[in-house]
Length: 472
Image (cartoon, rainbow, N blue to C red; front, side):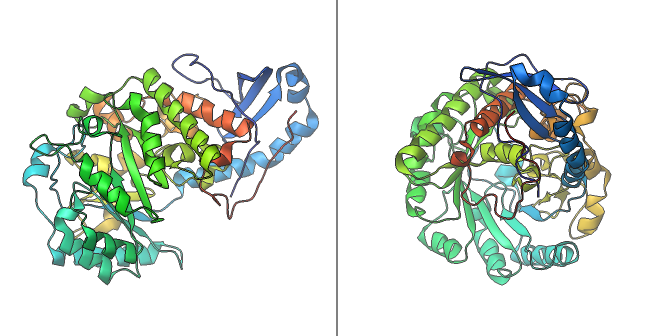
C-alpha cells in the first residue's frame, strides 16, 4: 500500500472560493504555514502531493532528480488509484432487518410511512438471507478474510430476536456490527453483543437533551438523550464502540462541546457526519458550508487538545479517513470520500423485503432498486442499471469537480444527495467548502507532524512508504 506522498502540507486558511484549485496537470497552491510561505504541488490524477518553499519553487520544478523520482513512481500511484476506484469488490452489507423505527428523526433517509408501518424480516428470512450472503462472499472474498454485516436501518433492535439468532448462527462467518438508536439496548442485549465482539454504533446529536432532541426524537416528539447516555456509560471500556453525530444547523455550534462530552465518557471513536439531504425533510436542517466547517474544525482542535492533555484519543473517524486518503490512499477505511463511492463497489444495502440497493441512502428511492436477494441474487444486482448509475459516477465527469486538485480526497459525495437535491449523477455533491477546508486542515496537521494525534494507533500497520521526498 502507498503511504505518505510527502509529510508536509497545507495550512488552514480561509476559503479561496467555491473550489480548492483547478487546472490540468499538477496544481500550484499557495500555502502559509506559520511565517513560512510555501507552494503546494498536487497531482489530481494520482493524489500525489508535495510542498516546497516559495522561493525554491523554480528550482524544484526544474530539479531533474525530483522530477525523475516522481516520474518513476507516478505509474504506481496511478495504478493504486485505479485499483481503489474501479477494482474493488463488495465486502460489507448494510443489512436492514426491519423497515420500522421507533424514532422520527428529522433527516432520516427512509420514508416516514415505511418507518411507521413497514415490515420486519421473519427469522427464517433473515437466516436465509445470511446463508445466501455467505455463499456469495465465499466466491468473492480472499481466503481468511470475513465479510462484514452491519445491522442497520431503521432500528434493527425492533427485530431483536431474529437479529440475535442470525449473529449466533453465523458468528464464525461474518464480522457483525449493529447501528442503533440505543433505546432498546438493555443489559442482556449489551452482554450478548459484547460477548460476541459485535461492533456497536450509537446515534447521538448533542451533548445535552435539548440539543440532541431537536433532530432525534420519537413519534411523540420526545427525545431519547437520557437512554443513549445511559448506554454510553455501560459500554465504557468496550473497544468496538462508537457514536455517530450528524451535523445539522441545529447542533453545529456545539460540536466542540460534543467532543468534550464524548471524550469525558471515554468513547474511543466517533463520526461527526455532515447531514445528507436525500429526502426533502432533511433540507430543513441543512447547515451552510462555512459555519459548519468552522465548528467542525474547532471540534478537531478540541479533540487534539484533549489527547495532548490526557493521552487518550477520541478519533473523529470521518476526518481520520480524509487524513489517511492523503497519507496512504489505499488504506482508507471509509469509502464515501472517493469517486466512485463505495456504494455497490465496497458495500451494498439489503432492505427488509430482500431488495438490494447500492447504499442505505438509496433505500427510500425505488429507482435505485437493483433486484432482490431472494429472487435474482447479489450478482445480478451488482450488474444492474440502478447499481451502475452509482458505480459509474466519476468525479471527472462532473463539470464543477473534474479538474479540482482534491477530487480524490473528496469524491464529490454523496451520489444519492447529488441525484435528489442537485439534479443528477453528474451534479456535484453538497458541502464543497466543507471538504475543501477539511482537506486544508488535514494537510496542515501533516505539515505540523500532528497527523497521528488524530488517527487510530497502528493505523499504518501493513503499509509501506513508496515516496517520501525531503522538504525542499
